[in-house]
Length: 287
Image (tube, rainbow, N blue to C red; front, side, top):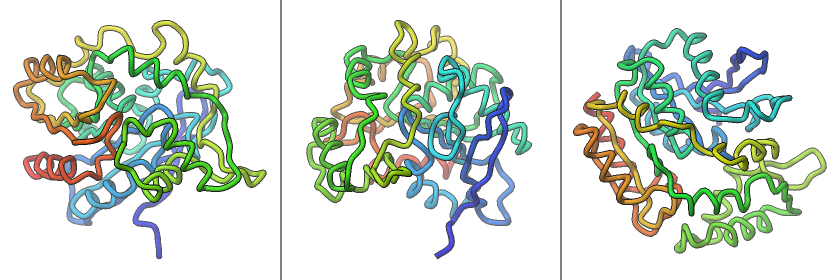
């Protein structure tokens, strides 16, 4: 069966070839596309079910940030940071002639969404923020630091799935082995030596592990650019990154925001859960 998307590339300002999936949507659709931006260690496969679902009614673009998936690895690890990723997305938007869009950002992708909004207020017409906000809980950051960049690899997909379950089991206590296998195939890839390995450059951990390297400064100021923009905030009930207090403050600053909590899920929901999918569909129906 043919892919529901086309693999394409764009070039960053520093010359990297970066990959994105382009789900064309209906020929009759001429509105703003949906741009899906993934988390720190993830790639375009993270959004596969959701992107295919949305593409029934509109165009969807899913970029892979530098150092992930089919995008080039950066020779300078210092460029693995949200400000640079947002600049890379700017180059993609320019190439595709996109002057307005709907953003779906998971974790790091949500940080990028705020930076993109602040750079050019008014162009983002709707937002899904997945388990992230202008403030992040240090406990969640420390947990991420405990595994990012470890470079582990496995002989089989089952071994990879069991390792994911060991690392992330507290965030998804109801997951079965099949669920962990699905997560493994979103997150890892068969490497050249036949081992199952994580599909990102281990050097992304270097700037992330530096003090202050996890989250850009002054994100509440950036978030102000999304005031009155229709927004869905998805939070995992068990999240250790997005606190209920931050959720409350985000709602105060954006009256157009609605919240949905995914039960029995931590950081970060897949956005394939019924609660998340229904909220996203409702948002898109208004735009």
